[in-house]
Length: 377
Ligand code: GLU
Image 1 (cartoon, rainbow, N blue to C red):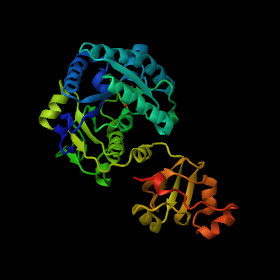
Image 2: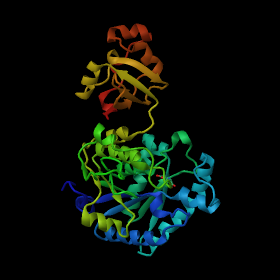
Image 3: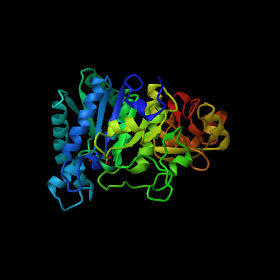
Image 4: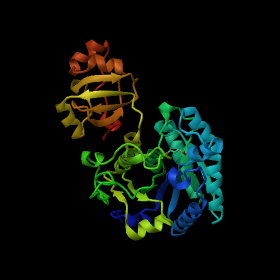
C-alpha cells in the first residue's frame, strides 16, 4: 500500500488524494501570455486521474506573472509588494478563468480557494479551510488554490506556493504532493555542473540534502526555487505525506513522470497526529528558546521542555504562541506552544521548579512547553 517509487503517486489506491502544484513558469510565457495549449494537455491528464479514482487538488501559481503583463509588460511585477499585489489581483481572475474553462471542457467543476499564511497558522481557520476542501472534494469539485496575494502582507505571506501546497495537503488529508517545476528534481550539485546527478529518492531530509539547494529559481517568473521545495518536503515528510518534484515543461508531464519515474521523491518519515502535523508545519514562530545539551537529549527522547534546560530566550511572545526551540549551536530542534510569555521565560530560564515561584511571584506551571504541544523538527 505504501508509496515507495514515483509511479506510485499515480496509483489511486496508494495515493487517493493528491495535490498538484504548478509553478508560474509552466503557466505563463516570459512575455506574460498564458500557456493555454500546455494547460489544455495538463488538464486532460488531471481529468484522466480523476477518472481512475484519484482526488486532485490544484495549487496554481501564475497570478502575479499573468497580471503583471496585463498591467505593464515592461516592468517587473515583483518590484514592490504593492505592484505584486495589484498584479495578483488582475492575474488571479484571469488564472481562475483559465482553470475553470479548461476543466469545464472535461465536464469538471473547479472551485477557487485563496488562502493566506494566517488562514493555515490559526487552528480554527485551518480547520475551517480543511472542512471546505473536504466538502469540495466530496462534491467532485477540483479545488484550485493560490495564496491570496493581493491582501497578504510581507510578514504574513508564504511567498511561494511550494510550502502552501504542503500545508494544503495537510489540511486536505492528502497522501501525496507533486511539485511541477522547470527542473527535473533535486540535483546533488548545481544542475549545470559536470557530473551533477538527479537524486531520485530522499528517505529523510538531512543536512546533506539541505546543502544541495541553492537560493533562487531558474526562470525568475516564480518565487520558489529549490530551497522552498525542500521546506515543503520537510513539512510533508513530517506529516506522513509523500512529495515529489517533477519536470512539468514537457507535454503530458504526469504521464511522463509516471512512465519514466524521473523526478525526486521524498518519502514520508512520520505520521504525526493531525494536530501535531499542523503544529509542525506552522511557519511563523514568535520567538526562540535555546536549550542546553542535556535538555536537547531529553526533548529528543520525548520529554516536555522544563525551564531548567533553557539557556536563552529571544523574541517577544505571549502564552500560547508558537516558539522555536534551538540547540546550543542554534540548530532548530523543535517547535511548540509556550506555556509562558517571553518575559516569564526570561525570569525562570535555567531555574529548577523550587526556584521558579520566587522569580515569578506565583506557583509555576510544570512545563515551559508540554510534549503534547511540541513537535521535533
Ligand atoms: N502566488 C504567486 C502567484 O500566483 C506565486 C508564488 C510562487 O511563485 O510560488 O503568482
